[in-house]
Image 1 (tube, rainbow, N blue to C red):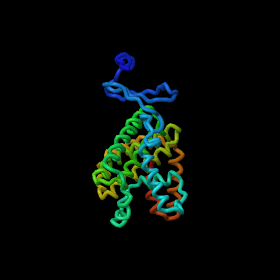
Image 2: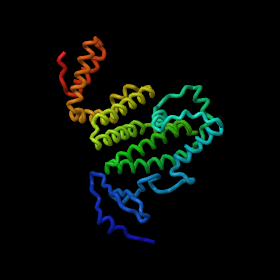
Image 3: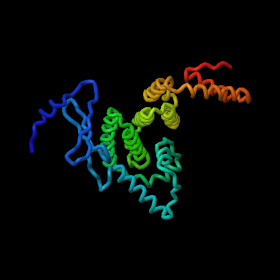
Image 4: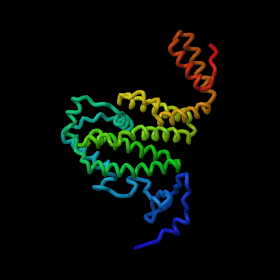
Length: 284
Protein backbone atom coordinates (compact mmCIF):
# COMPACT_ATOMS: atom_id res chain seq x y z
CA UNK A 1 0.00 0.00 0.00
CA UNK A 2 1.34 3.42 -1.00
CA UNK A 3 1.08 6.25 1.52
CA UNK A 4 2.22 9.86 1.45
CA UNK A 5 3.98 10.62 4.75
CA UNK A 6 3.96 14.42 4.38
CA UNK A 7 1.15 14.89 6.89
CA UNK A 8 2.96 12.77 9.47
CA UNK A 9 6.17 14.76 9.03
CA UNK A 10 4.32 18.07 9.34
CA UNK A 11 2.81 16.91 12.64
CA UNK A 12 6.31 16.34 14.00
CA UNK A 13 8.69 18.79 12.27
CA UNK A 14 12.43 18.28 12.13
CA UNK A 15 14.45 20.60 14.39
CA UNK A 16 17.90 21.42 13.07
CA UNK A 17 20.85 21.22 15.45
CA UNK A 18 19.41 18.68 17.85
CA UNK A 19 18.40 15.03 18.03
CA UNK A 20 14.62 14.83 18.32
CA UNK A 21 13.42 11.58 19.87
CA UNK A 22 10.14 10.29 21.28
CA UNK A 23 8.60 7.09 22.60
CA UNK A 24 5.34 5.77 21.17
CA UNK A 25 3.19 2.70 21.64
CA UNK A 26 3.39 0.49 18.56
CA UNK A 27 0.53 -1.31 16.87
CA UNK A 28 1.76 -4.50 18.57
CA UNK A 29 1.38 -2.86 21.99
CA UNK A 30 5.16 -2.57 22.54
CA UNK A 31 7.03 0.69 23.11
CA UNK A 32 8.93 2.03 20.09
CA UNK A 33 11.54 4.75 19.68
CA UNK A 34 11.11 7.30 16.92
CA UNK A 35 13.87 9.65 15.77
CA UNK A 36 12.96 12.58 13.53
CA UNK A 37 15.47 13.04 10.71
CA UNK A 38 15.69 15.83 8.15
CA UNK A 39 14.40 13.54 5.41
CA UNK A 40 12.13 11.27 7.36
CA UNK A 41 11.66 9.16 10.43
CA UNK A 42 13.57 6.31 12.07
CA UNK A 43 11.65 3.81 14.24
CA UNK A 44 13.23 1.17 16.48
CA UNK A 45 12.25 -1.39 19.08
CA UNK A 46 13.40 -0.65 22.62
CA UNK A 47 14.44 -4.26 23.32
CA UNK A 48 16.53 -6.88 21.51
CA UNK A 49 17.42 -6.03 17.90
CA UNK A 50 16.28 -2.50 16.98
CA UNK A 51 14.57 -3.57 13.74
CA UNK A 52 12.65 -6.30 15.57
CA UNK A 53 14.07 -9.15 13.47
CA UNK A 54 15.28 -12.47 14.89
CA UNK A 55 18.11 -13.77 12.67
CA UNK A 56 18.42 -17.56 12.83
CA UNK A 57 15.89 -17.51 15.67
CA UNK A 58 18.16 -15.44 17.95
CA UNK A 59 17.66 -11.95 19.35
CA UNK A 60 20.57 -10.73 17.21
CA UNK A 61 23.31 -11.93 14.88
CA UNK A 62 25.81 -11.31 17.66
CA UNK A 63 24.02 -13.74 19.95
CA UNK A 64 23.77 -16.27 17.12
CA UNK A 65 27.54 -16.25 16.56
CA UNK A 66 28.29 -16.20 20.28
CA UNK A 67 26.09 -19.25 20.62
CA UNK A 68 28.16 -21.00 17.94
CA UNK A 69 31.34 -20.18 19.86
CA UNK A 70 29.86 -21.46 23.11
CA UNK A 71 28.76 -24.66 21.41
CA UNK A 72 32.22 -25.19 19.90
CA UNK A 73 33.74 -24.68 23.36
CA UNK A 74 31.41 -27.28 24.83
CA UNK A 75 32.18 -29.71 22.00
CA UNK A 76 35.90 -29.28 22.64
CA UNK A 77 35.53 -29.40 26.42
CA UNK A 78 32.70 -31.77 27.39
CA UNK A 79 33.59 -31.44 31.07
CA UNK A 80 32.71 -27.72 30.79
CA UNK A 81 35.55 -25.95 32.59
CA UNK A 82 33.76 -22.67 33.19
CA UNK A 83 34.79 -20.95 36.41
CA UNK A 84 31.41 -19.73 37.63
CA UNK A 85 32.30 -16.05 37.33
CA UNK A 86 29.38 -13.67 37.30
CA UNK A 87 28.31 -11.72 34.20
CA UNK A 88 30.05 -8.50 35.22
CA UNK A 89 33.40 -10.25 35.76
CA UNK A 90 33.07 -12.00 32.40
CA UNK A 91 32.19 -8.72 30.71
CA UNK A 92 35.21 -6.91 32.12
CA UNK A 93 37.47 -9.74 31.01
CA UNK A 94 35.97 -9.82 27.52
CA UNK A 95 36.07 -6.06 26.95
CA UNK A 96 39.62 -5.51 28.19
CA UNK A 97 41.81 -5.07 25.12
CA UNK A 98 44.82 -7.36 25.18
CA UNK A 99 47.44 -8.29 22.65
CA UNK A 100 47.62 -12.03 22.12
CA UNK A 101 51.03 -13.65 21.86
CA UNK A 102 52.02 -15.39 18.64
CA UNK A 103 51.48 -18.73 20.33
CA UNK A 104 47.94 -17.84 21.43
CA UNK A 105 47.19 -16.42 17.99
CA UNK A 106 48.29 -19.67 16.40
CA UNK A 107 46.12 -21.68 18.78
CA UNK A 108 43.12 -19.49 18.03
CA UNK A 109 43.52 -19.63 14.25
CA UNK A 110 41.17 -22.60 14.00
CA UNK A 111 38.41 -20.58 15.73
CA UNK A 112 38.29 -17.97 13.00
CA UNK A 113 35.08 -18.47 11.06
CA UNK A 114 33.48 -15.07 10.38
CA UNK A 115 33.47 -14.45 6.63
CA UNK A 116 33.59 -11.03 5.00
CA UNK A 117 29.81 -11.23 4.52
CA UNK A 118 29.28 -12.24 8.16
CA UNK A 119 31.29 -9.24 9.33
CA UNK A 120 29.44 -6.89 7.02
CA UNK A 121 26.10 -8.06 8.45
CA UNK A 122 27.41 -7.68 12.00
CA UNK A 123 28.61 -4.13 11.26
CA UNK A 124 25.19 -3.22 9.89
CA UNK A 125 23.57 -4.66 13.00
CA UNK A 126 25.98 -2.75 15.27
CA UNK A 127 24.98 0.44 13.45
CA UNK A 128 21.36 -0.17 14.45
CA UNK A 129 22.38 -0.45 18.10
CA UNK A 130 24.45 2.73 17.75
CA UNK A 131 21.40 4.67 16.53
CA UNK A 132 19.41 3.30 19.43
CA UNK A 133 21.87 4.09 22.20
CA UNK A 134 22.24 7.66 20.92
CA UNK A 135 18.44 7.99 21.02
CA UNK A 136 18.35 6.45 24.50
CA UNK A 137 20.99 8.93 25.66
CA UNK A 138 18.71 11.79 24.59
CA UNK A 139 15.84 10.11 26.46
CA UNK A 140 18.14 9.75 29.51
CA UNK A 141 17.59 5.99 29.61
CA UNK A 142 21.17 5.38 30.71
CA UNK A 143 20.61 1.73 31.57
CA UNK A 144 19.70 1.08 27.92
CA UNK A 145 22.80 2.98 26.75
CA UNK A 146 25.01 0.84 28.99
CA UNK A 147 23.30 -2.29 27.66
CA UNK A 148 23.78 -1.37 23.99
CA UNK A 149 27.33 -0.02 24.30
CA UNK A 150 28.37 -3.14 26.22
CA UNK A 151 26.81 -5.17 23.44
CA UNK A 152 28.71 -3.34 20.69
CA UNK A 153 31.99 -3.85 22.56
CA UNK A 154 31.28 -7.57 22.31
CA UNK A 155 30.98 -7.17 18.53
CA UNK A 156 34.46 -5.66 18.37
CA UNK A 157 35.80 -8.56 20.42
CA UNK A 158 34.09 -11.01 18.09
CA UNK A 159 35.78 -9.44 15.07
CA UNK A 160 39.14 -9.37 16.81
CA UNK A 161 39.01 -13.00 17.83
CA UNK A 162 37.07 -14.71 15.03
CA UNK A 163 37.18 -12.75 11.74
CA UNK A 164 38.85 -14.60 8.89
CA UNK A 165 39.90 -11.44 7.08
CA UNK A 166 42.50 -9.27 8.77
CA UNK A 167 40.82 -6.07 7.62
CA UNK A 168 37.60 -7.21 9.31
CA UNK A 169 39.51 -7.96 12.51
CA UNK A 170 40.33 -4.26 12.86
CA UNK A 171 37.53 -2.62 10.84
CA UNK A 172 35.67 -1.27 13.89
CA UNK A 173 38.53 -1.13 16.38
CA UNK A 174 38.90 2.63 16.01
CA UNK A 175 35.39 2.98 17.48
CA UNK A 176 36.33 1.22 20.73
CA UNK A 177 37.45 4.34 22.68
CA UNK A 178 34.21 6.14 21.79
CA UNK A 179 32.03 3.21 22.86
CA UNK A 180 34.02 2.81 26.08
CA UNK A 181 33.56 6.52 26.81
CA UNK A 182 29.81 6.39 26.13
CA UNK A 183 29.45 3.40 28.44
CA UNK A 184 31.38 5.10 31.28
CA UNK A 185 29.49 8.36 30.76
CA UNK A 186 26.15 6.56 30.95
CA UNK A 187 27.13 4.60 34.06
CA UNK A 188 28.05 7.90 35.69
CA UNK A 189 24.82 9.57 34.54
CA UNK A 190 22.84 6.63 35.86
CA UNK A 191 24.48 7.08 39.27
CA UNK A 192 23.77 10.82 39.20
CA UNK A 193 20.06 10.16 38.64
CA UNK A 194 20.16 8.30 41.96
CA UNK A 195 22.13 11.18 43.52
CA UNK A 196 25.16 8.94 43.95
CA UNK A 197 27.86 11.46 43.04
CA UNK A 198 30.69 9.37 44.47
CA UNK A 199 29.59 6.33 42.42
CA UNK A 200 29.44 8.55 39.33
CA UNK A 201 33.05 9.65 39.81
CA UNK A 202 34.09 6.04 40.36
CA UNK A 203 32.45 5.04 37.05
CA UNK A 204 34.33 7.81 35.27
CA UNK A 205 37.64 6.84 36.90
CA UNK A 206 37.13 3.22 35.83
CA UNK A 207 36.39 4.38 32.29
CA UNK A 208 39.54 6.51 32.21
CA UNK A 209 41.62 3.62 33.52
CA UNK A 210 40.16 1.29 30.87
CA UNK A 211 41.06 3.81 28.16
CA UNK A 212 44.59 4.14 29.54
CA UNK A 213 45.00 0.37 29.44
CA UNK A 214 43.59 0.26 25.91
CA UNK A 215 46.04 2.81 24.52
CA UNK A 216 48.88 1.21 26.47
CA UNK A 217 48.11 -2.26 25.14
CA UNK A 218 47.93 -0.81 21.63
CA UNK A 219 51.46 0.56 22.23
CA UNK A 220 50.18 4.10 21.75
CA UNK A 221 50.13 5.46 25.34
CA UNK A 222 50.67 9.02 24.07
CA UNK A 223 47.20 8.94 22.49
CA UNK A 224 45.60 8.81 25.94
CA UNK A 225 46.33 12.49 26.59
CA UNK A 226 45.27 13.40 23.04
CA UNK A 227 42.01 11.46 23.13
CA UNK A 228 38.75 13.38 22.83
CA UNK A 229 37.03 10.59 24.74
CA UNK A 230 39.43 11.01 27.66
CA UNK A 231 38.87 14.77 27.60
CA UNK A 232 35.10 14.24 27.68
CA UNK A 233 35.29 12.01 30.77
CA UNK A 234 37.74 14.30 32.55
CA UNK A 235 35.48 17.31 31.92
CA UNK A 236 32.53 15.37 33.32
CA UNK A 237 34.57 14.37 36.37
CA UNK A 238 35.72 17.95 37.00
CA UNK A 239 32.11 19.15 36.92
CA UNK A 240 31.13 16.59 39.56
CA UNK A 241 33.88 17.15 42.14
CA UNK A 242 32.33 20.32 43.68
CA UNK A 243 29.11 18.35 44.21
CA UNK A 244 30.72 15.84 46.54
CA UNK A 245 29.54 16.18 50.14
CA UNK A 246 31.59 18.08 52.69
CA UNK A 247 31.68 14.94 54.80
CA UNK A 248 33.87 13.25 52.21
CA UNK A 249 36.40 16.10 52.42
CA UNK A 250 36.38 15.79 56.21
CA UNK A 251 36.92 12.05 55.94
CA UNK A 252 39.93 12.56 53.67
CA UNK A 253 41.44 15.10 56.08
CA UNK A 254 41.05 12.65 58.97
CA UNK A 255 42.76 9.94 56.96
CA UNK A 256 45.53 12.39 56.05
CA UNK A 257 46.16 13.23 59.69
CA UNK A 258 46.24 9.53 60.61
CA UNK A 259 48.70 8.81 57.77
CA UNK A 260 51.02 11.58 58.99
CA UNK A 261 50.88 10.34 62.58
CA UNK A 262 51.77 6.81 61.43
CA UNK A 263 54.50 8.28 59.16
CA UNK A 264 52.88 6.73 56.08
CA UNK A 265 54.05 9.62 53.92
CA UNK A 266 53.32 7.90 50.61
CA UNK A 267 49.65 7.56 51.55
CA UNK A 268 49.66 11.10 52.90
CA UNK A 269 50.84 12.42 49.53
CA UNK A 270 48.05 10.58 47.75
CA UNK A 271 45.45 11.91 50.19
CA UNK A 272 46.74 15.47 49.77
CA UNK A 273 46.26 15.13 46.00
CA UNK A 274 42.71 13.89 46.50
CA UNK A 275 41.93 16.82 48.81
CA UNK A 276 43.34 19.28 46.25
CA UNK A 277 41.16 17.67 43.55
CA UNK A 278 38.14 18.17 45.80
CA UNK A 279 39.00 21.83 46.08
CA UNK A 280 40.02 21.55 49.72
CA UNK A 281 43.07 22.81 51.58
CA UNK A 282 45.50 20.68 53.56
CA UNK A 283 47.11 22.37 56.53
CA UNK A 284 49.95 20.00 57.33
